[in-house]
Length: 189
Ligand code: FES
Ligand code: FES
Image (cartoon, rainbow, N blue to C red; front, top):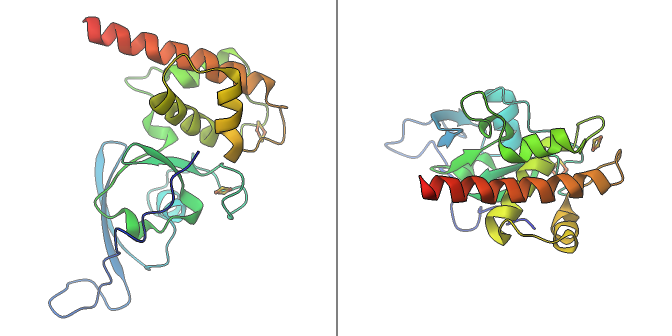
């Protein structure tokens, strides 16, 4: 399940207006990406995935279809999974963005990444960053005890052309349990 681009409720900085330092026809964007503050002056038509891949060189976010079908481009914006191939970067001005590169902490894989590794939830790996970002979002919304049926329904927007989904679903279930165990441990500390 994905949330739509916020282009309606978060207008882009148009640039070029009197008093603005942004060049005419350009938009200025500032975001926190994987914990770092970034900014840029971009064509207002720049997609979030282009900004991430081409300007920030965060190439873990993939483009499979460019039409909101496959989910390879899923990232989190302000804690919600979105498809970055159909989100304008300018609409994310001021947002907090997490990409697949931002999940691992201190050299340790995120529990969902580790579950995909342990359960062989990938073959070529092209869909995997989007699958993992979507899976983390599912757990954030549905909790750690999420059923196989719910996982399959929630992954409706992510397509894998390699695996047949069995191992992906097993990985998400294991990752969900590990995530909730980790959060319980943190709460007890
Ligand atoms: Fe975004 Fe396929 S590249 S949904
Ligand atoms: Fe190849 Fe999913 S592992 S597309």
